Image 1 (cartoon, rainbow, N blue to C red):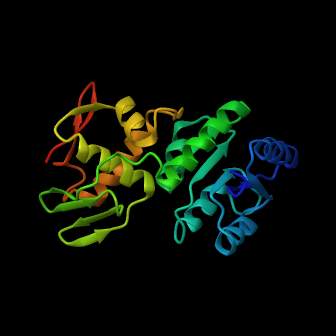
Image 2: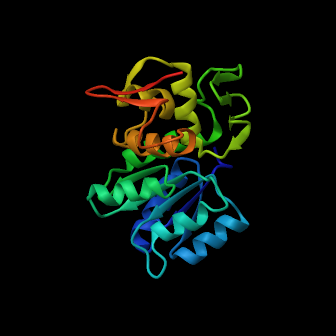
Length: 229
């Protein structure tokens, strides 16, 4: 694990040093940046395996850092926020964050989320589907982690791909949000189940002809979602 690098972007120096100390005890190589511009440059020049990104940074806030990083990198991003409003959490996920954790948090919870994100990024928990699957004009290759719609390749974020692969594997079944989290995020994921809704919305934008009237990923009231195809 010693070769796994984590970038902590946090302007509160005491918290940054506490995170660095505890993550290094877990065997990670930890780099600290205290402001957004330096973090973007660091990610561009020497990409880490994971970014822990505070929302409230001086100058360039964490949301804008996440937006800019997502234009050129799919590195897993966990956002730290002192805010509790759902709108902030959803915004972070919609602009490309993979997870969030609200201050104050326990180090044990943080470590569990770090491990889960790193496993997702490595593909270690990819659904065990090997053959190319087809659903109408949609083709998905789990081994190659590639998706095509009408012959054109789509660009999906890692979690979006994992969720789509799990949907396809379990097509025509009504799946709860908890089942989708367990299948696509891993059973040790400890985040909010509403994370699923954000990623379903992104998938619908990518694969539905009319995302407002989905025909592939349909809502099952009182349960969750079903992939039809």
